[in-house]
Length: 235
Image (cartoon, rainbow, N blue to C red; front, side, top):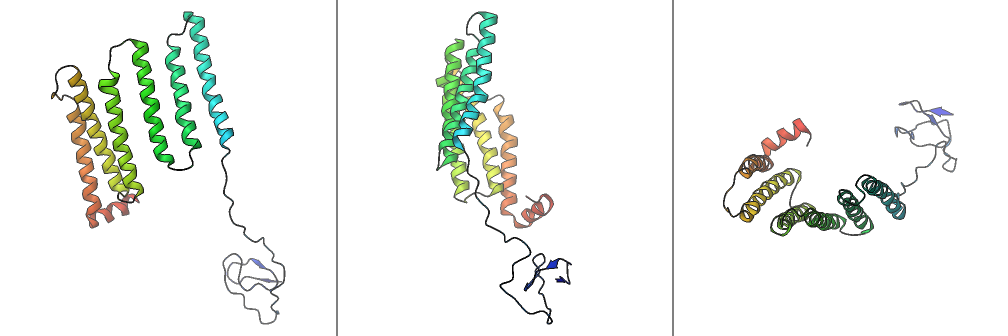
């Protein structure tokens, strides 16, 4: 029996290289026996773990149904009817839909997540408008604002997946999308209130977001600055 001259691991009969450090084994006094059994297990290919989707769906349904039922029970015991628990229960139901549908999707899962989030969020806000009797704000404000953000996010994801955006330009695009979304929300609110063209708070979001976005674009296209940032931040 011999040992590796480099790391000291015990070698099996007929080994040509150390199984640990791969140092060549040179032992003229010992005959080579390629058929000798190895003294260590042969590495097998890693197996792909498959998700049990049915179990995950049942688990998600149980975790979301329990608080929904608890909210309804507390509401019935305290108020004698369904008041505030309708908001909580509908939110949990829509959350389950937003989680379960992408889980079942085999292809284009990212776009399914965006689509289901868009649909469930709009459904919830529509229910809130109808249950609260707080005025008609869903169609003039919420729906176009959420639709715009969904379009912006889908476009950013598409550009990133087609490798037209790297990590720096991806962050720049996200900051720009947030700035555009805030300006659009204030414009929609002002238009509904009859004062279109008045911007009070969105410029304070627009200015820093655009500065950060332009700075990231500059870093991305300036090789010296990009390499320095990458060296310091490992990004």
